[in-house]
Length: 334
Image 1 (tube, helix red, strand yellow):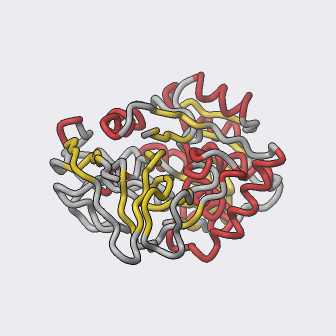
Image 2: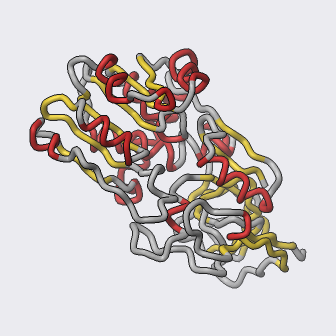
C-alpha cells in the first residue's frame, strides 16, 4: 500500500526565537521497508523546549539537526508495514521518529509501548522522557531526603510538574516557580505543591526565601538565567542544584549567559550538576515501573496540553512553549 508522508524539515538555523519560516512542510511517498526494517505511522509527537537547542550548529549533548533534515522528535506510532521479525504489523512502538507522518526504522532505539498503562500521550509525558527526566534527575542527581525543600523552575511544564509531585511522594516540600497566577494555582490546587512562586510578579529570590526560610535543599532547574541566579542566593548548606535545562537561554541572540552568583556554591558547600537523561538508560525500566505505579494509584497526575493539526502544526506547537501557552506536557497529535 502506498502511503503519503508529510514532513517538517529545518529550513534555516534560527537566530533568536524561531519563526514558522524556519521550517518547511514537504509531502512525498513514504519509504518502503527493506529486510530488517519496518514503517511506523506516527500518531503523537513530543514537543519539548530542548528542540530549540537542537537547531543550533554548535556542539551540544546531541548532534544538531541539519538544515534540510526532518526535525528531530520522539513519538508514538503503529507499525503498518514490516520486514522485521521483532516488530510485526499492528505493534505500537515509541522512538525518535522525527516530525513526520511515517518513519522508517531498523529497530534501533525503538521499544514496544504498552497502552494498558496509559494512552499514547502519557507515554510521551509521565512514562516518557519527561517522567524519566523528573524521576532520575531528582532522585538520583538531586538526592532529596524526606523533609527537605525542593524548588523546581518551569514547574507547570512537562518535566517540572512531575518533578514537584515526585518530591512530594518522597516526603519533601515542593515549591514551584511558574509564570502567572493561573499556573501557580494549578501547582497548588491540582498538583499539591506546598508553595508557588510567580516569577512574573517579580522579586523571585524574596518569594523563594519566604517559602523556604531554612534554605533550598534541592533546586531542579529547567530555566537558567535570572531564575537560576536568584535561587542560588537561597541555597541551604550542602544543597544540590540539578541543571536539567535552560529554556530562558535557548533563544538568546548573544550567547548563553552564565550564573553571576555561582560563588554561593562555595559558600554553601553546594554542588551543581548537569543532567541528560539519555546517559541513564539502564535506570529507565525501574523508573518507568515506579512512575506507572504512582499513576495507577493517583499519587502522580499527568496533564497533557494536546495540539491538533498534524505535521503542519509543529511550528505553532513549538512556539507555544516559549510563549507559555502550555500547562503540563505538550503533545502534537498527527
